[in-house]
Length: 336
Image (cartoon, rainbow, N blue to C red):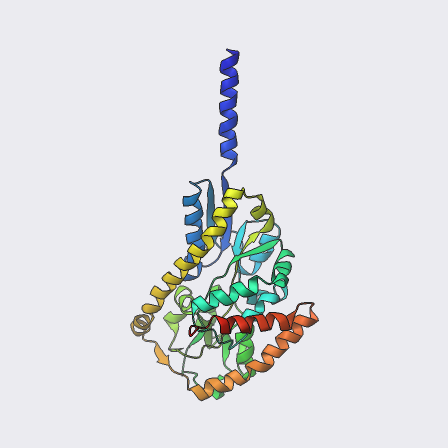
């Protein structure tokens, strides 16, 4: 009887030990599942598959936090992983806003990934994220933003005067320099802002114009303005990351590249159908003349220098981060 009891106890101990190995992470994103979140969804799929179901992720679209508070939620351990955009709270993540400067010259998503990874690897970025108990896991690469708008197309710098535009970060600054009036309403608020006339135009990547419905009420879309993009990393809570077993941490780390590859392939499919979407919704495709884009680009240089000065004033190696970004853009150009 004693032997039976000992064996039973050992079996129960092993069972509970095995159960203790199971890890479930809560992941805070927003909106709905879309191209912007496909790498998060793929990552959840991969870690569950590779861990035999012992490491799972519950991806929540707005149920855990709103998009402007995801970094705060990470800092207090309210959830283990989250996505956020630097432009939503620039004072909390100054270092990575270098990636949101206008007219950096990024040409495609693969280059965007490489440039973001180069900046994320800088110690100043890691140190700043550590203040929020966060560690950057991967980027959310987005194409250059372009405008959709209502009314007559805005295709000259002169026509931007007084234009109320939903644009954040460096994109908002370059439009402001051209006389427009930028506002930083969140992506989820953009449709209502446009529909009610609070804004005349919205700057998004293609997936967001689709996901948040701005394309549904647009009269026109600029196909080649390409003023820049926003940077939206996926971060993990440091304590949760370090608490993972070596096996689970390795699974997570090695799955990032696969998740990004899936994201890029999915986005390529979305772009293939973009022309058909414009025709279906009766949206006019507007080509901005190169001389008009050149005028906008002239406004970018002072914005770049102001970013460097502001970063240095806040104790960051601004010039070093800026030079790193420019070098990464050049080194990872498609022509190379």
